[in-house]
Image 1 (cartoon, rainbow, N blue to C red):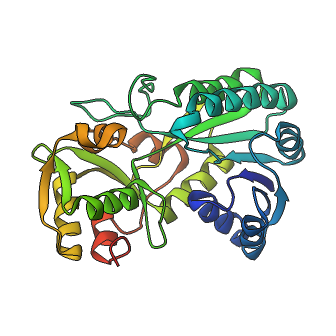
Image 2 (image 1 turned 120 degrees about the horizontal axis):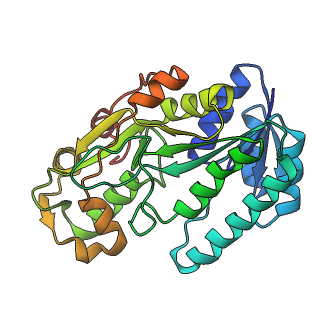
Image 3 (image 1 turned 60 degrees about the vertical axis):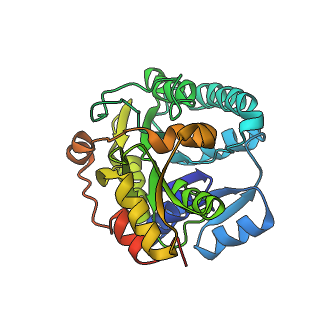
Amino acid sequence: MHVFITGASGWIGTALTRELVTAGHEVTGLARSEASAAKIRALGATAVLGDMLNHDLIVSEAARADATAHLAFTLDFAEFDETIDNELRLIEKIDAALAESGKAFIAASGTPILEGRVATEADRLDPTGPAGARAKTANAVVALAANGIRSALVRMPRSVHGEGDRNGLIAALVGTDRQLGSAVYVGDGQNRWPAVHISDAGRLFFAAIEKAPAGAVLHAVGEEGVRMRDVAGVISRKTGLPAASIDPAQLGVFGALLGGDQPASSTATRQLVDWEPTGPTLLDDLEAGYYTS
């Protein structure tokens, strides 16, 4: 099988590329720089230079491949609307190019935030919420299934953790803690974040490419909900910073994410594609010092 991956040199893309190459599949990865291309080649894959504005290149590679994993996304709040609009235009072109091909197009998204209850794969993303800003693109990906494309979403939890994580939300939280001089949480810290180890996330994307039916929504959730007070407690022990509650307004959008109670289930996902997470927990990785050394 030949798989094309946007974001192949990124955190999740690297894990997926490694899984596919190890299993003997051919992988082509989109790279924005020669440094990213070298990283992709080192994994045993082929790199093509381009970015998310190179629609013709991306569509051509998707049409040439048996399956596409769309993982690239530039999180720039200053140009967020433009980024979303660009992605929507790209998905329209993917729709036209892959129509009735039956090829897989698997894209990353985020688990819903539903205060007061556990989110499931059946829940729709709230486009007005802090984790639902990409709902337009997520809905566009699912809609591809109506045009003969085996499209599916893999919704990622707030924490995709592991050794080497430098750009995820837990890394951002530790960086914020160091700036503030406290290991912070919101309120009493009983609110929960779902989490998954990076190795399990890579395996789920692989399973989605192989098995997910058209229009499927999957949750890459290894832990339904980790209390943020517990996260702050480990960060406090590992850094020597005092644990403290904070007004989320001090942190803007990140404060809303930090304070939200957002557990998510993956029960339906595990049954649908026979996926079982086996990696370390979020607290295990914090205790190992991956985020605080």
